Image (cartoon, rainbow, N blue to C red):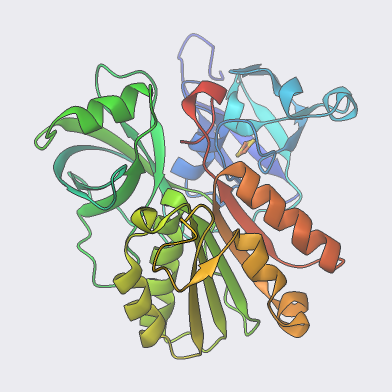
Length: 350
Ligand code: FES
């Protein structure tokens, strides 16, 4: 008998056309249960907004956690498409997933942890170090969910370290203060070292695909964390590709980790150019670097780089959307991987 029968045994979720299957308890999302079983299920946001996990429900029933109509079209809903990151199995389920992606091979881990320390990177960004109780593997560019008891809902943050020799029980995140945000107001109020928390992950599909094409890595604000991790991993792996890193911030006081990025860029086997760009810096300041938006820097890149590059971007949705539109207008297609960090009020990544 399946999940909701007398024995309460997990039901089976079968993925077509691959034929792969995993047990579903119905207590967690189909996506999380697939990832826990080591299935490389396509996903990005995990909160029902990006549509990356969209799959067709071939048979069986699910219960939606949030309304899929926010993300799926009426045609898709009529065609029985669902969002597995926002759906719980109600018994045996069959899904059609066109591509089980070539995701990094890390099983989903839920572990207890302790916040072991913080360091101010800017006036509103903290480096937060978390020591986990279970070994926790991830690929540079991915993210984890942090949950602090007594504070509603998990918060998602990208891993900031990508070097292969990083301690496997230590995770580092860059967290920007969100005025009025429950979690960050708590975090920034005083030294929270020693606080117990829970960590789940890894999630996300922002990781550097092996390729000889130029890589254009674009970060905004605290979106620098996954881009820095990607660079460190690429330097460690001896990646032989041209890389351009653009880091957008408002003013010089919003820049951070510049020396670390420069060190990773210098350690790359291929050429790597780092361009910090400021959008609101005082015109009279002594800043001699680029001014404007990240899209201004991208617009000035050579046409052959723009047409061939693979893009890896992380930052606020307006920045990522503008970049995607800009590149979409310049080329018919091209690799574009992005992680938009979003605030809790819109139930998205923060
Ligand atoms: Fe499911 Fe984004 S909508 S992963």
